[in-house]
Length: 314
Image (cartoon, rainbow, N blue to C red):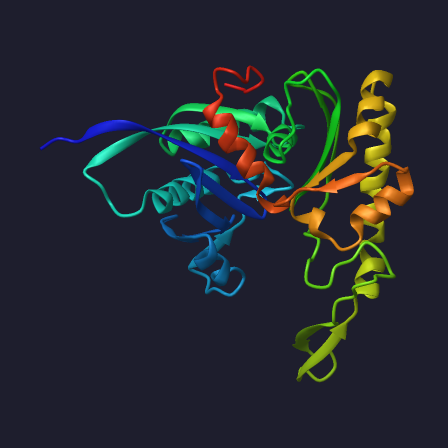
């Protein structure tokens, strides 16, 4: 009996730190963007959490890769294989049919034509028949509930694992945007944007070897110390928001002041960030209800509105 095909629709938030796949409004994959390959044959050994456990802890015959760096694909082969692995994970057990995939994928708004083509090629090679892309700040705006087709201005700040993107959106278009690519990821455990918090977290204990004796030791780290470490990164975000506001037409600027600015992405969960930004700019900042999954939710909504959303990229 031969295989028969059907069209399955999937929305993918392809992130530097994590990849999230939704299907029929259900999150079916939420995994670290990591793949483990056999160093000799390039055969896939693991993706996601299992691959992350191997990361930098493996013998020479296994290489672990983060295919995306600062929001864009850095290793095309690894990215394609990782997407394939996650789609297989999303599909569950083997079936007697071969799905033809329609995909909407979130990509950074500053992506070049080469980077966009790399995402499209990787998705098509992983089984995508109809591949659409949406800029991540637009997806995040949709995910937090903004009517992106409305004739008014809204600003979204999406603080992800590799990039922070700031965009002013009106009438289904990105009017102005700024993108900051930053190495590393803002830590949530004891992270803070302020050195004084009303509801202060307990110190976070870091385990590691003593540099002098090589013996194991524990060092408590306070949120104040992390706040000092993060100050430069947050200052860059502040400067980018102010720059985007400066480039915003007056009528849309007035809408933003009235509506406030929306924060999404994992970095939006940083303690005190909304207060620091509000005090700095005298504009209300709203943290998304589920900031980590705002882009994923938005790509899912875009998937259902392909005919309506003419800003999607083919």
